[in-house]
Image (cartoon, rainbow, N blue to C red; front, side, top):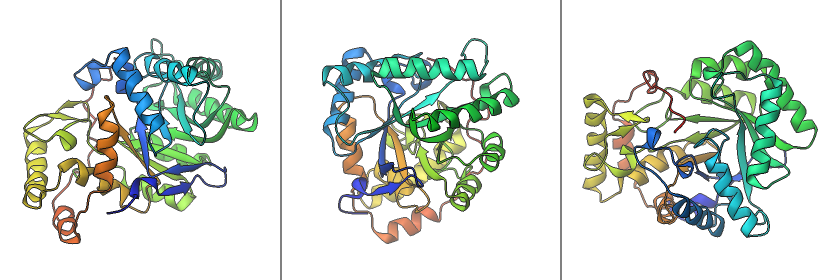
Length: 323
């Protein structure tokens, strides 16, 4: 993949929203050491948001739960210091449950939205997702709140509405029930795992745009096995590390960063409208764009895609941590 691959854009259905092939994920900017294994202080987070705003890919994704609100607050601080959102920039955020109780009724969804808009210093967002229903106290309650999210779109609070979650078995029935404009899947469609593939196919059939998040599996597919064992927010198993080393060997033979291969695996799939790449320091923004445009020969892709991969849920044993 060569040229300005990261700047390729895709429409989000008929909503009028257009998104670039790269979206910057900002969960780590909320300071979540329990998830990522390291902290991000406010000044580093603000510098990273500034780098995103100054870059060519005008798209970021956040959530009310990232760092218990710190991600949105830090993004909002930069929006405020700049006198508003940069022209043409697309913001995606999420409706979230009550973290302490799991309640996700309409009142909670509305409260989450109000808190997000206040923190972000915005009066509306481009994309609004219903987030992590698998962790809510009641899926039936979630279904009512999803209906209210569509009312939010009618009210002009968001241009597009979607579903952002992890558990594919929870997501697919909801995708069949509702006409979502877009969805986010994470850690489940990457070089080492294809758990979300049936859901991505379903989304394509239904005309739902797909944002594929966490192509680096939260660490090891960006940093390599010598520097990280982090995989889907947990320590990688020995089997997973063996799979990653096989990818590393192919990449090393052709002098290709493993991060470039992991990112482009997602970007080169025509079903994926945008790949969400988490960044936690300013230099990662430029590095992501460099990897997106790295020249990877067809022969390398043939070798990489011939490797075995998993289809199980890589987060099945994960204990969710708000920090």
